Image 1 (cartoon, rainbow, N blue to C red):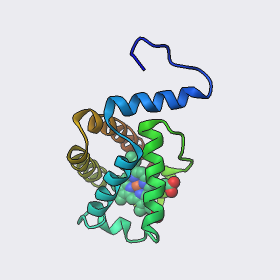
Image 2 (cartoon, helix red, strand yellow; image 1 turned 120 degrees about the vertical axis):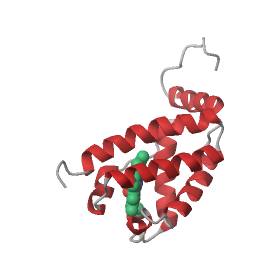
Image 3 (cartoon, rainbow, N blue to C red; image 1 turned 90 degrees about the horizontal axis):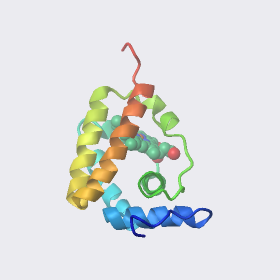
Length: 141
Ligand code: HEM
């Protein structure tokens, strides 16, 4: 799709937007899954984040869910239907968890993707992390 082409309406619209984002960023579902395996491989052994992941019963199920989430967020595939806020409610996350999560996510993204791909993910990761943090961290500890 050229920048001057109109974005199609109807059923082709989502596919056109996804194809456009993939072409601009170099991101695609397989590369996103590989990146997420690396990120969670590091997060689960991280001194601060690791303990929160000890309760994950099925890592393959988590990778599948989180891949759908990131493909929906970054590629607009619409494949994720879940409740991220509720999934974290019992974890007692603090601002330090969010800043460590973002630093590790960014280091892993920069190692896996071009600048445009990593920037695209980070813009969304920061926005969603901020909204989860506002929702989850109590006003007074
Ligand atoms: C601040 C540190 C964070 C920790 C320790 C953490 C930990 C977790 C854990 C333990 C789960 C449940 C996994 C399972 O039982 O299968 C989960 C789910 C999830 N997390 Fe996080 N998380 C953090 C931040 C984030 C952020 C910033 C995002 C998004 C940008 C995110 C997105 C998700 C999503 C989409 C799910 C799946 C929810 C569902 O089941 O539909 N998490 N996380």
